Amino acid sequence: MEHLLALIPALPLTGFLLLAFGRFANPVAACIGVGSVTGAFLVTVLLTAASGAFEGQHVLLQQDLWEWLTLGSFSGSIGFHQDGLALTLFWVITVVG
Image 1: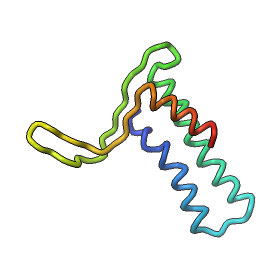
Image 2 (image 1 turned 180 degrees about the vertical axis):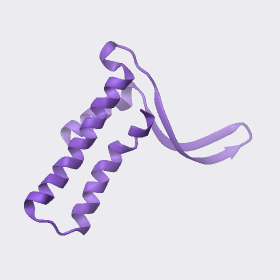
Image 3 (image 1 turned 120 degrees about the vertical axis):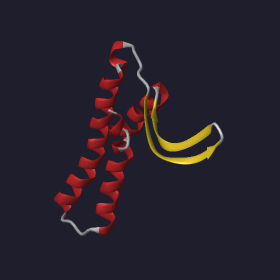
């Protein structure tokens, strides 16, 4: 399920880029705009179900995209991280969006 974390920002960003640089008729543009945000909402629902938040359990999901810095035993990476607070903010942002 970690691979789904990147879809939450990627789907609306893709919809924005398509709408900003493409010329679509109004019904198609509306489907792209609403569909990209709805897709992010559905991914949030899947991640909530996979993390066990509905059962009162919380499983930490983490997806590292690349290694940013390594100094001795310290390793800094860039990626996506899901905990309880991030999951709450996923819900707030995707429902308001």
